[in-house]
Image (tube, rainbow, N blue to C red; front, side):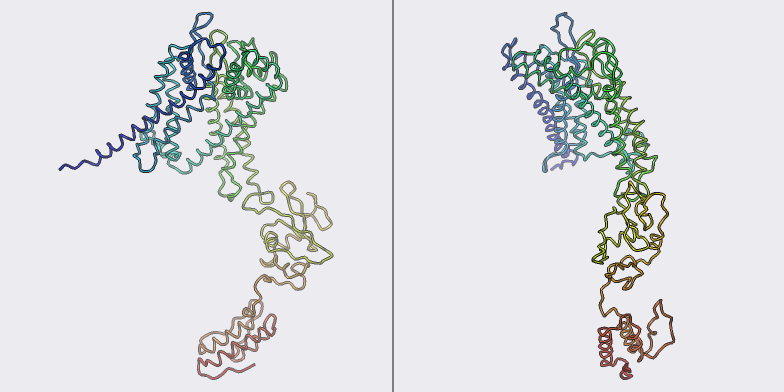
Length: 617
C-alpha cells in the first residue's frame, strides 16, 4: 500500500475551500446586480410611458451597476450624434457592492468551524476572480443598451476597487493586523512595522485621519443643507419639472438620494477653498463664482451659489476645515496624553506633532480619492468637467489639517499635561466641594476620604483658624490661597496655614475624626485615632506580655524597648516590669490593667523557667 504525502492531502483539502471562495465572489456580485436590477425594473414597470422593453431596462441596470464600481459609461444616443460620457459615480450606490465584496472575502478567509480554510492569498484571489467574472459578463451584456461601459475603465478603476474591497475583507478576517509586511518589501520598513511603538502610532494616525474625513463630509453636508434651505423654491421647481408622474418623481428622488454623498464632498471641497467645477469654464469657490456655469436642471444643484463675488456667508464655509483640523488634533492628543495615565507615559511633543502630521497626510489622501470619485464628466464640451478637482482638494485638506492641527495638538497636549495645581488628570484627584461647617452644631468631623484629599492632594486648604477654604478650580487656581479675611485674589499674600498643614505628621490630617473642630493642635487630638481601640494594643498590656516572655526565656530577651518619645532608662528586674508598664501606658485604664494581670497570672501558672512566680505589683 502506498501512503499519501501530507502535502498532497493538504492541497486536496484546500481545493474545495478555493472553489467555495470563488463561488462567494460570484454570489456577492450577483446579489448586488440583482438588487439594482429589481429596483430598475420596478421603476420601469411603474412608468406610464415606457419607451422600450424589459431587455433595455435590464441592460441599463447592468450599466448603472458598473457605474457604481467606478466604470465610465457612454451614452450613444444623443441629439448631436456624438457619444457622451457619464463619469459621475453616485457614491451611495457604491456602498452596496463594496460591502458585499468585503463580506464575501471575510467569510472566505475565516470559514465556519469544521470547514476547510484556504490561505489568505488564495481567498483574496478566488473572491476577486469570481466577482470580476460577473463584472465581465455585465459589461458584455450592457453593450447593447443605452448606457455602455467603457472597456478601458474595467481594469482601472473597477478591478482595483474590487481587489481593494476583497483585501479589506481578508484583513478583517485576520484581525486587522498592522504587520508583518511581505518579504519583498524593504527590510527597514519591515523592522519599523514590527515594532509595537510604530504600530500604535500608525493606528492613532489612521483613526485621527478617518475622524478628519468624517468631519469634512459632515461639514460639507451641512453647507449643502443650508444652501438648499435658502433656495428651497428653486429646488422644488427643478424636482417637479423633471417628471410629471409619480414614477418619474420617485426615480428622480432616488437619484438625488444616491448623490447626497457626492454633494457632501462638493461642499467640503468648497469649504477647503478649491471649490468645484460647474462645467469647463466655471468654478465655484468661497471667493465667488467665476465664469458661466453649465448647470443641468437638478434639485441638488440648486445649492450652487449665485454668480459674482462671495460675501461673509460664503467665507463662513472655512469653518469646516478648521473643525476637521481641530478634530484631528483632539483625537491625536487623546492617544498622546490620555487622562488616565501618568505624565511620564505621555508622548513627547515631537511624537505628537509627527503623528498629527501623518494624520493630516492621511486625511488629504482620503479626501483626494473621494473627490476624484465624486466628480467627472456629464457630457462633452462644457459638460466635460463637473465636481471637485482631486489634485487641488487633497493638498488643500492636508494643508488645513497640518497648519491648524499640529499647533492645536501641541497646545492640547500642554493643557492636558499641565501642573497639578491646574490639572484634572487621572493621577490628580478631582477637587470636590467640602461640606459647609455647621457653627451652631460645633461638629467639625470629616470623612476619611476628605481627610485623605486634604493631606496628600491639596484639594482643600485651611487658614490659621482651621476653617476650610474654597476648593481650587482649573479656571481659578488662586482660590483658597488667600488669607482668613476672605481675600482670594491672585495678588493676595499667601496664607502660612497650608505650609503648616503640609509639614504635619502623616496622621495629622486624620485628627478631625476625634470629634473636635479645633484642628490638629486642639485638645483631644489623636494622630492615629482611626486605628481600633483594642486593649490588646495598649502599652501596659504589651509590656506585661514582654515581661512574661522575658521570664520564660531565662533572661535571654532584652528589656522592653523604650519609645521614641521617652529616654531609655536602666534595666529593671523582670518581676517589676509589669507595674512600671502599667503606669506608663497611654490611658492606664482598668481594661488594660485587667488584661495585663490576666496575662501575668497565666504565665505564672505555667512556670516555664522554674524560678517561681514573679513579684506581684
